[in-house]
Amino acid sequence: MNGMMSLELDRLLPELFLAGAAVFLLLLGSFLPRRHQWVVGVLAAATCLAGIVATAVDWSGESMAVFAGSYAVDPATNATRVVVLASVLLVLAMARVRGHARETEFVVLLLLAALGAVLLAGTNDILLLAAAYLLASVPLYALVGFAKDAPGTEASLKFYLLGALLGTTMLFGVMLVSGVGRGTDYPMLHHGLSDAPAIAVAVGAVLLLGGLLFKAGAVPAHFWVPDVTEGARPAVGAIVTTIPKIGAVVALYRLVAVPFDAVAMNWSLLVAVIAAVTMTLGNLAAFFQTDVRRLLAYSTISQVGYLLMAVAAAGRAELALPSVVLYLAAYAVTNLGAFAVVCALPDARTLDDYTGLRRHRPWLAVSLVVCLLGLVGTPPTGVFAGKLTVFTAAFDAGLGWLVVLAAVNTVASVFYYLRWIAPAMRTSSTFGRPDRPATVTAYVAAPLSVAVGLLAGPVLALVGGGLLLP
Image (cartoon, rainbow, N blue to C red; front, side):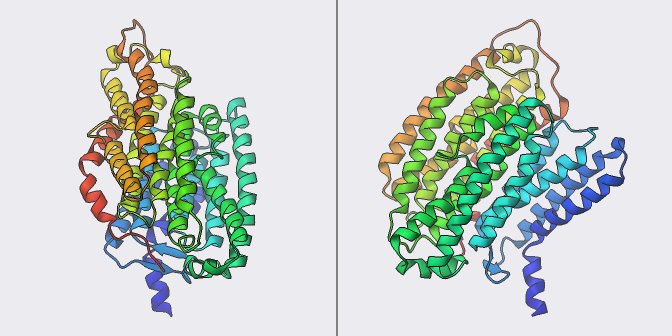
């Protein structure tokens, strides 16, 4: 028994690192003077690196469910760990909290939100799913209002109210699904839901999926994304449009592929419709944005729509899961790269404020162009490789109409990204001094977004093992 417990703990080292670091750093920060709070950020970065190393060592291990089958350790979980931890490293580098009175609190809340995202992706039990949802949400409510200004407070309140509403509906879904499925873990639900009353399963599943759609920022739970991204600090906007999306999309995939796979309902069509509406609404709304943060927020919504295409193909196409992981990795680094430019120029709020960037900060302009064209899906960037594999998976699953719509949306998205690139390429006599750490982060993220595309083959091979199935 002790040997099995030790083995299970060994397989959970990245999660244990995050949880332990959050507690330890909170206590450490309480005793450090303000001028030495930077130590907390350095230790948090070291924790993320240790988690990535532990994941790499564990990757070749056999897929298994630990702690009474409630948590799955498989290629999908390992990939989420790496993407989330790498995203935290980029956020720590770009965030302007050095010397802030509450620098420790920012770092600890970020680690807790990252832990929640990882748990969302690996959960193999709907009770743990509900707990992970709360852990991935509550720290972000505090981070959005971190600046204690009027826009941040308003955004935090909106975020909290919608999250509480959909979190409550999610709990009702947990109650219904566990009741008719006669269990809570995914393998038991896979068998129990097959002969359960169809109406009860449908209602419970929709309520359950609603919470995850909120975390992902998909229609119809997308309203908070632009307001929160605009009202929060730029680094927090980068967090809420990236880290929770990673865990939520993988959690959605796992739900559709395992417990709901045996239900006699066309979940593929439902998710495909949500994907179509999400990508279309995100792109159409982005056309009219002049605030760069709102533009990136609606861009995020559209990207989630593309990701949901692979979720719709879950269990019906071999490339479905690998394409999700590849797209998430590419989107995370590319989106964070674009936000790093925003963090580097905190006074530039509108598209016109970027006029003259090429002349005064040419390498920062290059980084912006690479990241924005990467979000479009321009080769050889990672998002291009991600979109190509997602489109292939959706086509293999018989969703040709969705692939055509996604291709049209991709072409249409070029317009609003060019609206940002065009002023940056013009000349201007004056331009503000950028923030150095955020600038360096943009210089790192831009080539990484290309590297993910060039290394798409190895990334797809790493996730070839798929999910832990019943």
